[in-house]
Image 1 (cartoon, one colour):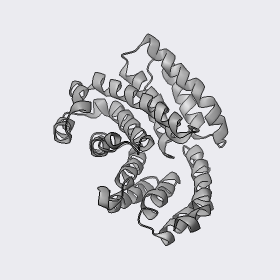
Image 2 (cartoon, helix red, strand yellow):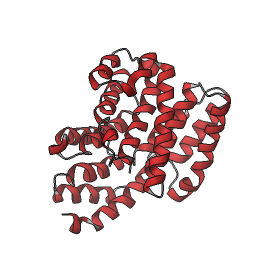
Image 3 (tube, one colour):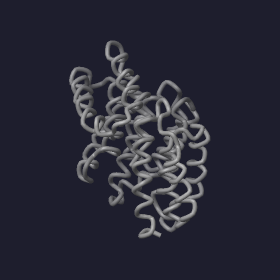
Image 4 (cartoon, one colour):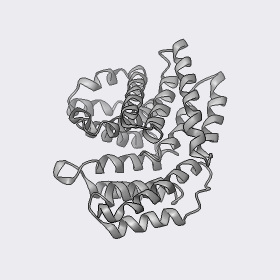
Length: 277
């Protein structure tokens, strides 16, 4: 799961402009500080429908599209109850995200049919004014790739998603930087080294995420254990990270939901460790 995904919602929700912005901000804060994941699981779909309804009236609003991309990616990655549903929801997230970045940055409209080199050549033109759309599309792409990990065409977009998130850090290394480093760590460790994975790059990204959040975002350690330690069969590191997660106080402002979910996942990963290793 993308346990850090809901930290994006405070950024994405704030994108919804004018009359909806205050409501969206309040929703995102309430979600991030909720300690009962089931409430969010049951309640978030209403917010998804709300964003869909806003897009019915404003289909070309990059702000609302970005908000929808972020929340659909988050919900599809964290709370979808089966693989098919996760694949469907993250596909919608990616579609919304692509529409947002295309409307915000004309050169992006050709990204999905470009080679990596052609795509990379366009990234230099991105600036802070497109940062929100870049962030939303980057997260949506990661969620989509992870939910379609058995699809070679999806995996082929890994370098594109990684380069886009790295460019985001260059144009707007703000409050979301820690989450972006978690995402970069996930991307680098989705595949084993023999298939192009870069575990040491992933480790550095996870460690940077932990540093930037001052250790408050427990999801970074869970993804570190899941993505890096399991990939390289480092049992000692795996168990240490997860034990640290379980020993930590999850009630940190802005991280409560992700931390509660992180602790639930730490328990599951430790329970299966003997079989895995």
